[in-house]
Length: 328
Ligand code: MN
Image (tube, rainbow, N blue to C red; front, side):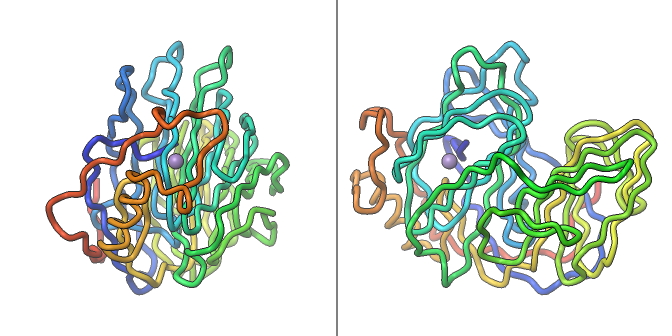
């Protein structure tokens, strides 16, 4: 998927020190995507006052607001720089094609991880005849010393998991409780899909230095002592050794965590950079069809490329994280 907002915010982000333990809710925003179907996604990252959780800098829940009979839109070719995209579907089937020659389908239980490095283009299409898609799209900011690497793509069909009577935790990226995903990452972080059984009372070990957040997708979950329902992101801060998870009726959630990202970010459209001119240069490379930066995708015509929106009439500068976020 993609940030297809017609007039994307100049979402800009500044690094912050470890915040200590917190329990703050950040609401999901309904973001309309382009296309005739008027599909929207629910976006919980970035937030004005919480640009990142570890290196996680973007999180959309797609498909949940569309009628089940409606297919999500086909996402035509578009570019990325400076990030990894993570696609984790719960329902449906998506075909991914990109400018490094990938052409794969993904289904629930599988993970697509695309590392844009200096530049990549990709498309994501609903597979004809498949059920409507629903799932999560994450972005991970690449650190300064790796963000110019060559682009590459991975698909992981068999992710490791932790199981106990009340919890199934699939480790999407990074390490949780000593269980590590094979997916390639560039900063210390973790992402895990949590299926919590009705009546569960489980405790996960955490990395004390990491900051964490939880998004409940279905059901209800009490995280530490905070009840959480689908919608907002619960930001947990850092400085926790464990996380207690309880659910009366069962829940599906994701846990994100990582070392607080120590670099300023400038995010605009599908680009993650450090400064305005760099974003401007990437936009120009896309708009001028500079294939040394963003290669062509087999099976697509130039006319299918999604045009970049105009840059806002201001210089993009990093935004500072605010300590103590909004509470619902
Ligand atoms: Mn994309």
